[in-house]
Every structure is written in structure tokens, then in C-alpha cells.
Amino acid sequence: RVAAAPSVATHRRHTVAGEVAMNRRLSTSVLGPEKTSVFSRILALSPWRTLIGTAGGWFLFDVPYYGLAILQPRVLSIILTGLNVQQQALANMTVSTVGILATLLTMSAIQCVDLVTLQWVGFLITAVIAALLAVLWDGLIVPQDGCKAAASGGGHRQLFDSSPFQPGDLRRLDASRLEGPFHLYEEEDPTPNEGFAGSPTALGIAITLYGLLYGSFWVMNVTTYVMSSVAYPQEVRTTLNGLSSAMGKMGAITGTTLFGAILNGQCSNLNDAFLSILFVIAAVCVLGAATTAYGLAGAQQKKKS
Figure (cartoon, rainbow, N blue to C red):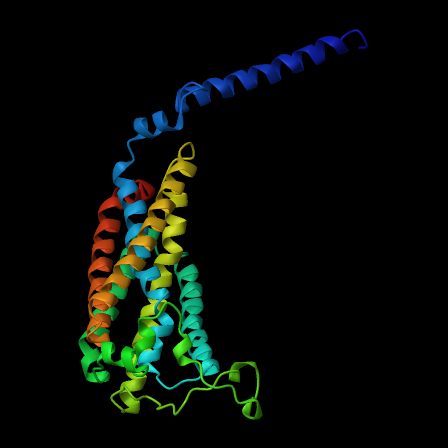
């Protein structure tokens, strides 16, 4: 038995070496030689249609999402005018809470609805809400002259500013009336809801639709991340996931630039500018739904088979 021990050890080494060699041959047969570049693997797989769905969908999602997200404080200043800093912060927190709830619902829906359907349906829901808010907007908001408001320091000039509070908005500090850190500066003669139609029902409709619009973005905010992680084979997954994500960042740059140009180009009427943005959101989301359905239909079919 002692004499046989070396031969057993040798056999085990040969067995392990054989398994390693076999795995290497299998890997080479699937992925090609070890020195094959990722670009060559991508060319061999030709995942261009799927890339249209993941990268194109991510791009078209980030255009309206980031374009509107940076304007959210100014948009809320149209709907809810005459608010102090604390009230505006509370309004933004309330809208953001809708996004959290939408994220949780989307995570639950993934368990029973395939990602492709969830994404293009999410795009369509966002498009419908944006179009509905645009159609109803004129009946909810009293038109304001944005250029005159900006010149006089009143109205809804905050929609154009890069931040909600500008030097012209800061009033004389009255230490005797401070109540907390949010009351460091006070607004002079605030006029609540001065630009609103005045109806509590109209106010409720506007804030509800805007909250739903913001919340609907978070369906695609989840699916675009997950989709790019599961739509590709393992050997090219990281690269194509990164490329899709990069296209999303390009969409964010495009959205913020485009929406800013719309605002600056329609200074005569803030409401017309916001209407244009809403219609752009609706159109881009319809295109996002079509891109998702076309680009990822093949991946969905492969998953089913």
C-alpha cells in the first residue's frame, strides 16, 4: 500500500491536468483562442439589434429623465408658487417619494413580467402621462410672461435659473423673525399660487400628474440597468453593458442641453416652454418603446425558447 501511494498521487495529478486541459479546449471552442480580443468576440456574435435595444433604450430614457430632473425645482415653483425654502424642499421630497414607490413596484413586477415588456410598457405609460399633462396644462396654469417676470424679479423666473434661489431672490435678513435654518432669508410679500388657475382641484390634478410622470421614469430606471446585464452572453456582457451605460450618459447630456435650449428659446412664455418639453418627453418615450420592442424582441424570443 505504501508503495502504491506515489502512483495514486500521480494519477490524481494527471486527472486534474486533464480536466484543466479539457476546460481550456471547451473555452477555446466557445470563445476562440485565449488572445482573442473582446472586439473580435463582439463581431463574431453580431449583437447589433440587441445593442439598439439596450443602448438605444438607455439613451432615450436618460434624455427626458435627466432633462426634467434638473428642472424639477423650477417646475414645482410654477405649480406651487409662493413657497419658502422649507416648503419647496418638502414638495421635492414628496415627488421623490413617488419615485421610491415606483421602484419598489417595478422590482416586484420583474418577478412576474419579462423585462422587455416591462420596459416598453413603462415608456408608453410615461408618454401618455406627459401628453395628458401637456393637454391639460393650459387649463391648469395661468400663462405668465417669463421675460418680463425675469426683468422685474417676480413671476416664475426661477424656472430659467440654474438654481432655485438667485441673488435677486434673497431679501434683507431680519434676525428677529428667524425660526430655524430654513428661514435664513425671507421672501418679500409672497403671493401663494399667483400663477395657478386658483382651483384646488386644478392644483391637485397638476401635482398628481407631475408626481406620476416622475414616478413612471423609475420603471425604465430599473429595467435599463438590469436589461443590459442579462441580454448578452457572458464573454461580452461587461463590455456591452458599459457601452449601453455610456449611451445613457450621452442621453443625459442631450436631455439637459435640449431642455435648456427650449427654455432659453421660449423666454416669452414659461408655460409654452414647459409644454414643449412635455411633448418632447412624450415623443422620445414613444420612440423608446419602439426601440425596446424592436431591439430586444430577439433576446426575448431566445429566452422563451
